[in-house]
Amino acid sequence: MADKIEVIYATQKRQFVHEVELQENDTFRSVIERSGLLKVFPELDPDTMNIGSFGRSRKIDDKPGKFDRVEVYRPVTADPRSVRKK
Image (cartoon, rainbow, N blue to C red; front, side):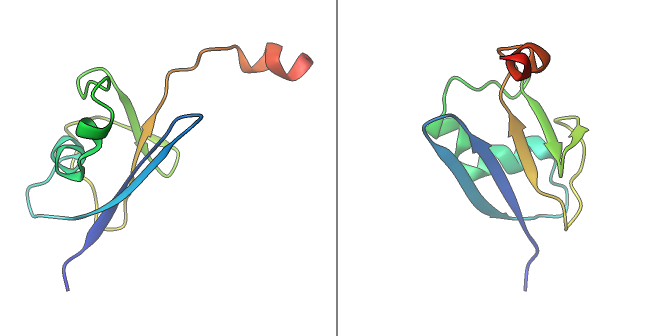
């Protein structure tokens, strides 16, 4: 059985969760491209997006491990400290 890795992205109105079969020379970029995320959300740019795995920041050309998952993060639009004060 081949190892699979999840690609996860969410907006306020929609979420994307897709499993991709992990191949030997995969990078986070290749997994994201095969997942179809960029077709569903064409505004995302792999060269500028922030990604991580289990809350830990990663680089787009890093190699994922077989137990990783790809989390694509939205840009922060408000200061969390000021939001909590309200």
